Image 1: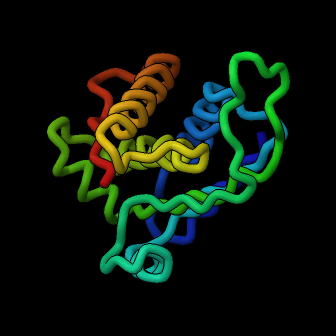
Image 2: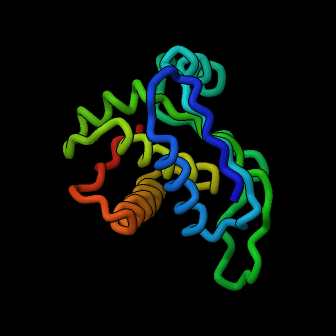
Length: 165
């Protein structure tokens, strides 16, 4: 799996954890190991520009996903998943800091960025949360991936509650 993490935000973030959880999520979703993903960490101003340009919404947001080859998790019958370019995930540590502090189970910016990374991966794979059933599926899968990754890493304490908008 080729995953690039590029921090353009000016904020120190745990890039290795972002890389690790993205790799874990993609493996869990059975995405071809030769697929490519880019994760870009930007400041609030850059995120706000993207949010306005692509969503026509004001202010910075927490995470945005830009799919490329529209890869999907393979069905259980498929032996070999297709490979390709997954796309880009853009994260904003300033929004992540605020969301982590405001969450029911307060957590750090880095924990929120890990959650947002998984959220972005799922969006790249076609998951959405517009409808209640879609939201339940996506957020349930997101929580399972984050919880399992944290357990595998031996991280203690409660996992971050979903705060993604």
